[in-house]
Image (cartoon, rainbow, N blue to C red):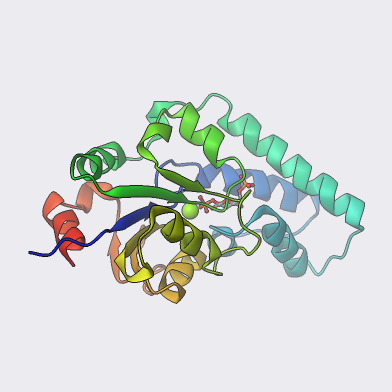
Length: 220
Ligand code: B16
Ligand code: MG
């Protein structure tokens, strides 16, 4: 059997750690302050989307235009709030069987990369003591185009020296699945099948992903 050089690319928020709920709470607080209604369905559209693009969307929904300095102070305020939510975060926030999956891939000598929109990605991986699994980290500080643009995953692929078709992306967001698909990678949705129907495969979480399936991906 021929084994190619595969790259396993993980999104962070909502895939590795349950920080998606903290992003949601922080944006919801802000939207409420601005008197803009904010639903869980709208929140799905913010998942995987950069901080700046998220605020632009919220303002559009509220049909609100604000000065550039207000825009920046709101973004700052959102991040402060988010950081306060994650301040006490530790290994208990790692989602079920993520570590088991990382251990299995590492034991099989697979390349592991992070492809996240978050500027807080490195500090979060350190907080939950997972940083050493990742040979490559591409995050919100390294890209200029937000998901659904595939830039973040293409950079990760380049850095692990795998071609797009040999990369497998784990994502919880619609924008991220679209980014992986546009990049020509295998997309694996983590979450609700109805929401992530554009993905090649969808699993509720990593407890549903077997070692056999991972081996299948390695041999594709
Ligand atoms: P920050 P991911 C994304 O991370 C989040 O899903 C999204 O909700 C957030 O707005 C974005 O990171 C930016 O995060 O404000 O920390 O830079 O899912 O791509 O890992
Ligand atoms: Mg995510």
